[in-house]
Image 1 (cartoon, rainbow, N blue to C red):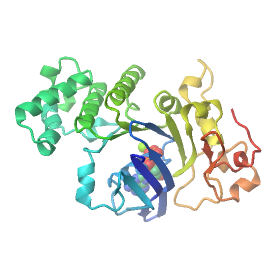
Image 2 (image 1 turned 60 degrees about the vertical axis):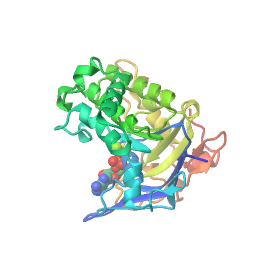
Image 3 (image 1 turned 45 degrees about the vertical axis):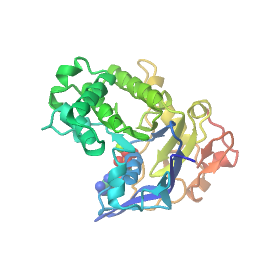
Amino acid sequence: MALLEVDDLRTSFHTRNGVVRAVDGVSFCIDRGETLGIVGESGSGKSVTCLSLLGLVPQPPGRVEGTGAVLEGIDLLRCPREVLRGIRGRRIAMIFQDPMTSLNPYMTIEEQLMEPLLIHEKIDRAAAARMALQALQEVGVPEAEQRIRSYPHQFSGGMRQRVMIAMALIGKPDLLIADEPTTALDVTVQAQILDLIAQQQRQRGVAVIFISHDLSVVAGFCDRVMVMYAGRVVETADTRAVFREPKHPYTRALQRSRPAMQAKGAELYVIPGLPPDLSRPVPGCAFAPRCEFAVADCSRTEMQLQDVGAGQASACLRVQRGELTLQ
Ligand SMILES: Nc1ncnc2c1ncn2[C@@H]1O[C@H](COP(=O)(O)OP(=O)(O)O)[C@@H](O)[C@H]1O
Ligand SMILES: [Mg+2]
């Protein structure tokens, strides 16, 4: 049985300018200990997908619907708010791009690490303090004994992200959702944080949903990748397959635009055009207007994710018809 099974998730925002279909029929599952990457340009619905699962989309203006999002028998879309609150942090933990959004500026790191332990575990303050220190040491914060008494603003961006990881893992979650956790950091620190998450993931066997706009970052980290465009899934595959033979022109475009692929001095490849306005219905394939392989049929035929062999699924009509081979 999968740890989490999401079926036809739909999240929309009802605004004065219309209904924004931010997540439009997303389905996926993740097993215990697995790493799933969600990749796509900014605005493709990656964050809203995860926030919807945790009940963190403001309603209104948001509306979260779907067949289900089942975490080992509990439907996250329909369970009572108290149940969901219990799941957040305990069974599913989340780390964000900007740790300051989740850290309390007025509490020391120690107090923040101890808080969930004192609330949820039957242990005394001394035991909680020992566990908090150990958690901080495990994520590689130097001189943790002294620094645990500091406040968040006394830490650098990279160190704050380490604290966030410690906080996320201290409740021993089954699933960690990391939403662009390294995007705001410089390249060296980025690599250190990725290593740390990977190491913690191996040690604890926690499942990870790793979100990034950068396919190369996801590739180094995840077993499986789900590519999102305009609120929909356009491709799913094992990470290696996505690189060897992408099955959607959008995946190929993401691959070509990843920074690691750019030769020094070469012009940066940018996917031409812009993602569609999600408040208007998109006929056919949402990527067609930007796609170099698009034909007239692409804008006329409803986009549907289909198995295209070798464990890969694609929403590209031309790939499905066998007209197009990408590499
Ligand atoms: N509170 C909100 N109200 C209206 N639209 C929103 C709200 N939150 C997100 N959106 C829209 O949902 C879409 C998906 O956003 P998001 O999931 O944050 O993208 P990503 O994480 O892939 O960059 C975007 O078009 C965004 O503008
Ligand atoms: Mg996001």
